[in-house]
Image (tube, rainbow, N blue to C red; front, side, top):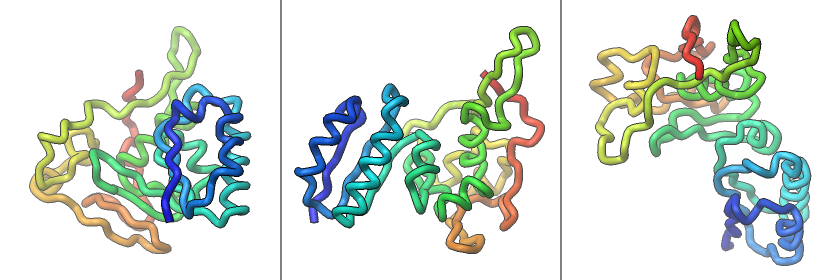
Length: 193
């Protein structure tokens, strides 16, 4: 069947999404990008999407940076960096045991997460950041695309792209330095913004 695509700009009002209840007859709903700007309505939107999913037996594909909505709604998660899947598996496992340094960096950058540090002068929490910039698509080579930003970068990362490897329970990651228990790539790193 066909998919219905909802851009974030079109999701600003839950009333608009409510109108889909009678119009959705496809097998999948794809929600693109950000839930930014609709925070108070996110729970209502999540509830509506779950209801549509159950009533119409739909698959739901969320493409977002909002880890909160992912944790709340997704059974399985794929983490992409620079166009490549670097980790995928059951959502609960990815949140409990992130294996790729990029996934760990995303977790640290969440508000209220352990990655936030207090500014000594203002006592306000500042979010952890992943240093550096995402490379331009014209700069991709046959190595780990995350290596310029990764605290675990080694010669192997620069020379060869790691393949996705199953670390058990359907949890896969593409990193030369991870293990089944996971590791803390950012341990001791104080990068904040």
